[in-house]
Every structure is written in C-alpha cells, then in structure tokens.
Amino acid sequence: MTETSAVAEAEQLVAEAAGNEGASSEGPQFTLELNQDQKDIREWVHGFAENVVRPAAEEWDEREETPWPVIEEAAKIGLYSFEAVGQFWADETGLTLPIANEELFWGDAGIGMAIMGTTLAVAAIFGQGTPEQMGEWIPQCYGTPDDVKLGAFCASEPDAGSDVSGIRTSAKYDEAKDEWVINGQKAWATNGGIANIHVIIASVDRELGSRGHAAFVIPPTTKGCEQGAKVKKHGLRASHTADVHLDDCRVPGSCLLGGKEKLDERLARVREGKKAKSQAAMQTFEASRPTVGAQALGIARAAYEYALDYAKEREQFGRKIVENQSIAFDLANMKLEIDAARLLVWRAAWMGRQGHKFENAEGSMSKLKAGEVAVWVTERAIQILGGNGYTREFPVERMHRDSKIYTIFEGTSEIQQLVISRAISGFHIK
Ligand SMILES: Cc1cc2nc3c(=O)[nH]c(=O)nc-3n(C[C@H](O)[C@H](O)[C@H](O)COP(=O)(O)OP(=O)(O)OC[C@H]3O[C@@H](n4cnc5c(N)ncnc54)[C@H](O)[C@@H]3O)c2cc1C
Image (cartoon, rainbow, N blue to C red; front, side, top):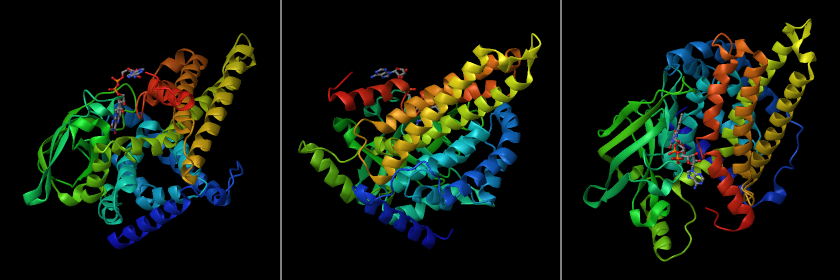
C-alpha cells in the first residue's frame, strides 16, 4: 500500500467510526445470519488456517521461533496487511473481526499470534493517532509481502502488569529539540525487539497514575530501544515474547500519538480534577477484548472438533468411546460452552462497533468467558484422547498449553471479574 492510500483508508475508517458513535439507532440490527462477505472472509481465512497454518503448527511450536515464512505467506495472500484488518474492522456489524480471528486461531494459536500480534500496535496507532500518524506508521508495522515487518505494543512492565498505573517508563519532553526522551523497561512484549514499530506506553506525569500515560511510536532502528531477554513460554511458542529496554531513547515530537496539544489539554483537565476521556493503555485493551476472546474460541473449537472425531473412532470395551455417556456429555458441554462464549464475543463485538457503551463490561465478559472455556475445553480434549492426548504426537496438548494465556493476558480472569463487578454494582470493588 502506498503511504497516500494508507492515509486515505485510515481517514475513511476514522470517519466511519466517528459516524457510528452513539448512532446506535441507525446502525445495523444484530443478527446471527451472516452476510455473503462475512461467509467469504470466513472461508478464505479458514482455507489459509487449514492448508498453511495447521500443517506448520507443530514445527514452529517446537522451534519456539517466529514463523517468518508463514507470515510471508499470509502477506502474499493479503491476510497479513492493513487492508485486511481494515476490511475486517470496517464491517459495520463488527462480526468480521472475531470471525477471522476465530478461524485463524483454529489453525494454530502460536502462529495466529505471530500473524495477529502486530494488530495490537496497529490498534493503538489507529485508536489514538492522527490521520497523518496512521498513514506514516501503520504501513511500517506490516512492511510488504517481500519484506514483512512486525509491530509491538508495549504496556506491561516487570512491576506493572494488571496494575498499569504502576508503569515506571517515563517520557520527558525536550522542548529545545522537540523530542521525547523515553527511559524504562517493558516486559512480555509480543514481537518486542524484533518489531519494526514499537508502541510504548509511558508516563509523562507519574503523579497522575494511569491518567498521566501517553502512547509513543518508536520508529525503526531508533537508538536506545533494544530487545531484552526473550521469554521461554508454556504455550503460544511460535509467537515471540521479550522484554524491551528503553535507554535515553529519543524520538521526534511527532511520535507522540494524538499530538502534544491533545495531550496537554487532557493533562490540564485531569489536573483540574475533571475526568480524562481516555487512558492510553486501557483504550487499546477495551477495543481488543472481544477479538482476543475470538482467538480463544478458535483454539477451543479446534480441540473440540479433534476430540469429537477421535471419540467416534477410538474403541474400548468393544464400542466407540463416544457411546459412553460421560464422553458424549463432555463433548455436548464443550460444544455448548463454545457456542455460549461465541454469543458473548459477537455481542461485545457488535456493541463495540456500534459505539454502544459497555454498561455491564460486556467486552470483559466476552474475553473472560472465552478464555476460561478455552482452557476447560482443551483440558477435556486431552482427557478424551487419554494417553495420546498427553503426548506431543497429538495436537490437543499444544492447544491446551496455548489456551492458558487467554486467562492471563489482556487482563487476567480476575481483573475481568473486577471490571464486571464494578460495572454491575457501581461499587469500587477491590
Ligand atoms: C505470552 C504473553 C504475551 C504478552 N503480550 C503482551 C504485549 O504484547 N504487550 C503488553 O503490554 N503485555 C503483554 N503481556 C503481559 C500481560 O498482559 C500481563 O502478563 C498480564 O496483564 C498480567 O500481568 P502480570 O503478569 O504482571 O500479573 P499480576 O498483575 O502480577 O497478577 C498476578 C495474579 O494476581 C491477580 N491479581 C492482580 N491484581 C488483582 C486484583 N486487584 N484482584 C484480584 N486478583 C488480582 C491476577 O489476576 C493474577 O492471577 C503478555 C504476557 C504474556 C505471558
């Protein structure tokens, strides 16, 4: 994509989003009847997941490396691109984004995250940047099919995970040079250190806690932005996770997402005791929760389908194991839980796209339910496969390892419950 067309596309999407805000009565009605575009995209992503992702899953899980050739394949067919994410996002029902994510992660979650990890950085630039910033930085998150690049979103720190107000990474403005000087350490960043574009959440005023945060783009090869330790993980091993060190990292003033004027206005409001409209990290997470829930659903569905097929083949005591109620009931409950979680994910995705406020933390509900369902379903799948389920010869143990992160990142299950309980009660539950 050329820079100009990226700007035009970003501007169009922003205009559409703005047009949708609060315009619920004019938005599309919620329906479970997928339209032809949604069905076509589902089929397209499923085909890639089945033919390219699934066959490569075991290898890249064992290698614990970023599957560059698979990302390149995704870029060649246009799946790894801003155009694709923009097209998924532009669907005014909100359902295409979760549908595409579910299909891709059905193929494999580690590779799925290697492909979709960039989206978190893109979502931050898209959600908080000016049209010029979107046009400049979003294409650089993806690169080109011949030279693919990645994006990383870095909010978490060693001492600031669930509690983002504890972020210590600081950004100080050097007025003479119109530059920001960033110092700190980021932890567990997906694509951290290997990304072309890093979006860093830093504190510009520690006294204001999370209301004093701002998001900065670190352009490629900026001095002072280095990868720290790469994390060895339980699951999602085809996705790179690492610390990122920021050591007197200087970026131009134009790298502050949204611009300085907007930041100064926001900080002034907060200092006057007025409510800030948004917090840099939370804004990104809120928008992405149903999508993350959809990824968990993809893993759960893959494990359920595998276990169902297995149970219909495997014989013990002279009959198929599915003929035992305990196995069949487990499978029935697995299907039930997956479908229930999908309804929550689709509801939240639809509400988010219509600009409806999540009055009862519906975004958190969707992510909480889907994450817990993925862990439970994949564990049951191992049980149904018995000894085979526990070995690396069969994919369900990998799916189980992959699923666990969905109760941890983008807000742990406990934090989602906190958000929901505060929303429904109006009390500041601790
Ligand atoms: C594979 C992977 C990829 C990641 N990718 C990214 C990324 O790209 N960018 C990024 O910024 N971060 C990323 N993270 C970080 C992730 O978001 C954090 O790990 C997560 O937010 C939890 O923070 P923590 O690990 O510090 O746990 P903690 O906050 O220390 O929580 C530990 C336990 O305490 C519980 N707890 C904490 N506070 C409360 C409370 N008030 N009430 C009840 N229980 C509570 C938690 O639920 C949890 O069970 C990633 C992490 C992993 C493992």
